[in-house]
Image (tube, rainbow over the protein chains, first blue to last red):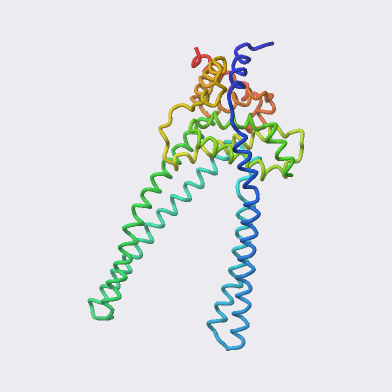
Length: 191
Length: 160
């Protein structure tokens, strides 16, 4: 059974002038980049571990606790970060195993996680503000004497907050928009 | 794998570009989406176990990546760019221009469909069978049929 309407649609659909050669060529040129990034990551890990081993030898030679702690941090952090990076890449979305619905569901989860992080960011700012207030109270109460330091510290915290709060609000707005799009598409798929 | 990828793009490149166009009006964003689709295929290709299923495999990746693209598009400021100038890309013959206009009208109508209808109709227009479409979208064959009928009705209405 022929469907004339569908055939007409197909003819118009195939009649599109598509330009994909440029994108293909660009991709071919850029295909070495992931290998370069991996090579860079491995080099950084190796160098960091080398420095860690050197710090460890210095710690033994100088009987230095500071060198020992630095060596411990480097020797633990470098491979841990490399492994975390590898796991993150391995667990990144596998497009061929997903469905449109699962892409949106995981997108929604990601957006919700980001919104929680933003709320946490505001809590952090509140904690810093409370800490600064407590420092001023102890200064004014005569328990500590560090007025010049406190002025500089307060100015730095205020500047950081002045930048950070609007950025959080902007990011939250974008995420809420993204969430709404995600939810609408999911509703479309489920209805 | 390199040659394999080039063969896949050679075979499916135009179809993937049409899929990208059905999701994205803006030319720059469309090219970006197409590149993302190609990259997702590059990284997934070694995991393809059954070469017979290459077609649904490629289209599944394309549609999933495109869905993610429209979900994240709000992060980028939307350009108020008018409908894409496909005609400008075409050879400057009158017939080609008319064909381009018809294609563009169809593309606009498809972009206005809801996501489920948009997906089934573009896959159908790329000659995928009902079971292949069901495989790509993770839905039942019966559901594919229902969606296709609704999509065709809406397109008839829009293109009248």
